[in-house]
Image 1 (cartoon, rainbow, N blue to C red):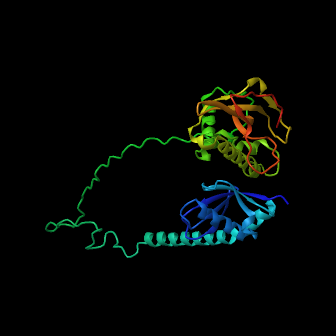
Image 2 (image 1 turned 90 degrees about the vertical axis):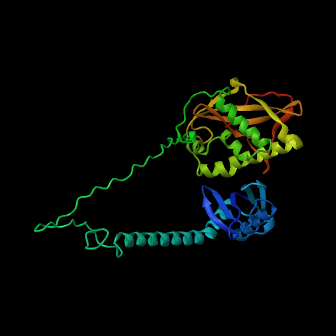
Image 3 (image 1 turned 120 degrees about the horizontal axis):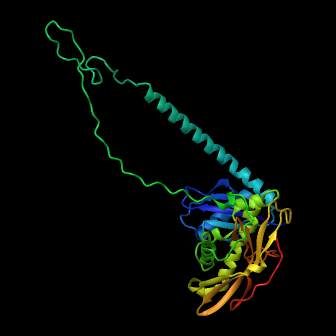
Length: 346
């Protein structure tokens, strides 16, 4: 039986260890431990094993031992069974949270109604009250009349706030184009620098912009659950490949420096719609090379496949396109800049 794969977000410093639900395909787990080290990992493993009905030894952290976002494998349990058990385990908690939120909303509404009803405040215009209309002195034989007063509120100078910058839209939410990408743009260079930062030991989140957008993959594929496939297979493998490349760099990982990303534009080819379970077409570029300096020596590793979205290159397979094992893979590491080769892949 193939094992299940879970993406888990850990929230340290919780009141107690608990499953907090599933959002966007990610399992959220609260742990009482304040850190993200071995104690928190043990708590996550124990909690997941208990909720999934398996032994602790069947739950393994594949990647992210020291991060809040972890990739976890569960042996002896298929993906559908694992998802169903997690949904049952978190369902009652979600119902309790919903009930509490509903009660808070009702209490807030009652408070607003009570305050708006007057609640014993003096009526405007009542005799002797501060809120009444003042009565002017009555001349002899005259008729009382209301005194006219003018109250001017002091001017308040409001500080002019700078208009907030609207975040750039996720390119994956926009429609695909047939524009041929270039590896000579500033955006591509920045994405590759972020990828290398993660490989050298920085946060994995730095490599996220270099990866093919999830929303674009959902538009692209004509399969049952493209979002789940992106998260649990493609992006999970990307993270594992980054970890494998980091191990390859060894003790000098942090001191390595990305020199350039070598691509051969002539190897780029258009993959039309209806091929490889695709709804729309894209450009594909195989076997690019990340050329880096390690202790004064030029070395390189491969990027197995990049594909396009709206005229920009993104990594889709850092290691091998088709894997025979669960762990990460480094594509064609070697001394010097290496050489690329043409390839037709999906």
